[in-house]
Every structure is written in C-alpha cells, then in structure tokens.
Image (cartoon, rainbow, N blue to C red):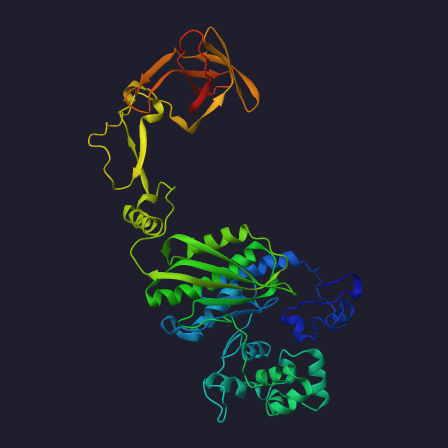
Length: 492
C-alpha cells in the first residue's frame, strides 16, 4: 500500500487478492478489506522492491540474452534463437521455474510475437505458462507475428491494452468494447480525432508493438538500446542494462567472428535533458562478457548524470577480427598467458609506435642512478650486459637488499651539517633529524665527456626510518663557491 491509514491506496496485490476483487491503484485499504476480510496489509518500500526486482532480473538473465524491467513485477524477455535449447516452450518453463524458486509463486510467463499480446495473455486466467499458437490472419499487412497476435487480441476486452486512461474512456464512450473493434477502425478517422495517440492505439490492437527488450539493433547492428522502466537511478541498475545489451551484441559479434576493440555507452535521460554518451577502449580486443561489464562499470562510476536514465545503449565503434587469446589482468599473478601478453604489446606497438614498449636493462656503472636503463623492446643496445645479482641463499636467512627508487631529476635539498656530515634535512617544509649516515662515498669520472662528475654521496636514515640518498659536488679549491645538496632517491 502507499499512504497511511484506511485511506492508503493499494499499489500491488497477489493472485488471491486479485481474484477476490482487489484492484491495485483503484482501491483504498478500506475498500480492499471490504473485498477480503482477512486481507494482510504491508507498507510499501521502494528500495526493498527495487532490490528484489534487480535480484530476480539477474536470475532470469541466465536463461535469455536480454531482460528488461518494464515496471513493478513486469519483465520483457528475448525469446528468439531458442531452437537448440528446446524452443520457446522450454524457455517459458525455465523462466517460470526460476521465478517460482525466487519466491514469486503466482508468476505468469507468456511467449508471443509482441509485448502487447504477451502482457494481455499474462493478465488472463488460465495456465501460468502459455504460448500464443502460430498462424496468420489473412489480410494482415504487418507480418505473421502481428497477424497471430491480432487474432489473439481481437476478442479480448479493450481494457487489456496499455492505453491512456482518457483515451480509453473516450473509446468506451464511443461504444467500443473489444480490441478487435478498435483494430477495425480506419487509421484516418483515428488520426483526425486523436492524432498520433489514436494511430498508436490502433497499432497495438493489431498486434504491432515497437516495445520490447531490444528497441534497436539487428543481425548486423552495432548498437543495442534497452528501455529502463522505471528509469534507472543507481549504478547497479545501469550496469544491469549495459550487461543485457552486451549479451546481445557479443552474440552477434561471435557469429561474425569479430571482437570488441572500442565501444560507446549512450544514455537517454528523463525529462528535457539532452542524451549523453561516453567512449571506452580496451587494451586488447575481446568478446568476453566479464571484462566488458567491468569496463562499463568503471565508466559509469566516473559519470554524474543530472536525471534518471530511461534508456541505455551500447555501441561498438571499433571491432577487429577474432584472434586467439583472452583478456587478462597483468597485475594478477595467476594471469600467466605469455601469448596474450605478447599480443597485447604488439597492439600497443602498432598503435603508438615501436618505441612505445620498453624493457629495463642493467648497465655496468659505478653511479647508482646509471646502473639501469630503458630500451625499446626488441632493440639490442648492449653487447655484454652484466648479469643480475644472485638471489640470497635461503640457508643463510639473509634478506633481499633494499630497492633504490630514483627521482627522474635530482631535486635541490636544504641540509644542516656539522663538519661536512649531514645532521638534518628539510622535506615538505619540515626538518627531519638524521639518525644515521653512511660513510662518505666519493664518485668521479666521465672527464672525457659531457658527463664529467666529481661528487660525494651520503646514504642517510631519518629518525622516522626513511633512507635517503643525498649527493653534493666535491668542494673545490679554497675560496670557490660551495654548491648545494641534491636528493637522488630513496630506499625501500
């Protein structure tokens, strides 16, 4: 119910209450109790029902490639392409069983050629699972499916069509009682009196319904757009819509032997707000659903929209022919596919140039900052590079030496010293006392080139435990200016 007290209005009722005459949206609590004396009333909770609908939709998506929330307790499914899985009847049975197992014992599932026919069948008494039988209505110019649905709808009450209440009232005033009577009216007369709404109502009566789980797309389309009802206001709801669209796109791409390299997310907003879109690229093309869903989630987490989203679309703006390998995370130890890594690096070289991928090489030099270099991967720059230092013997229980982290450019540093030995340093405008300092290490060389140097290095430890590598030029002759200290890097 929505509201308070006996005047609160019923928003939803189960099958038993509906059979007893309770009408959601029309009856107040007092009127509903007049129909069912022992009626159980529960307060309405939007968040609770929204989470329940999201959970149910996730279970249903395991059986069909597209699921769209079409309102409270209503879902639209994609029932196409089920021939190898038992056909449409088997799909309907699976969906019904999943819904009942989730706790919705009064669920109904119908497979039809249009949403309007399927929804009308679900509102009729009878078996919980139904299939509108195949066939065609002679003279129907909208295709076999529309003809079948028109035959089914023809003798049903007009109230089963999703029409505007005012339009429905006017049609009843005109004496129309069944859907078939509306379908028999001419398009010209309806358009003159009701405009586009009259033509849309006539199409629904004839089984022509543009609504569905896929509002855009086809066998060769790169864009799939799904309507969100109610409009999505949470991250999970948007990710769910994007996932459903990706399932359909990937099915088409796999059939074409293609993979996604770059995609674009489209968002239609509620109200007068203009649509918006965002692009996202992958490090390596893939048709795996998991990495693509996570990519969409990452894009949505950084996106702020001014209004709820009424439709979400996924468009493939770049695709490539399928190649072997899987999308993986290079920072996870369990990802050890060297072929996939090589393919990813090859794509980076192809897009960004041969120098875009580099690898480290050790260099035999006495200066700490010059004992390694980066070279373009695949280029030979050293004839005899030094071997890396051996790992410590576990039997000696010795630990690995600390790693030296170098600054790209040494930074000037203020140092207080005593007798040429640093005593404290200023970092981030704060002075830090030094607890220890290694003996002075004098380095010189390069006098034959522009890299000539003559300096003193000090490895110092602050009272906070930080180990810093400091350097300053060797003092010159007496009377020459003394140059300042620089910070080369730190150890960790």
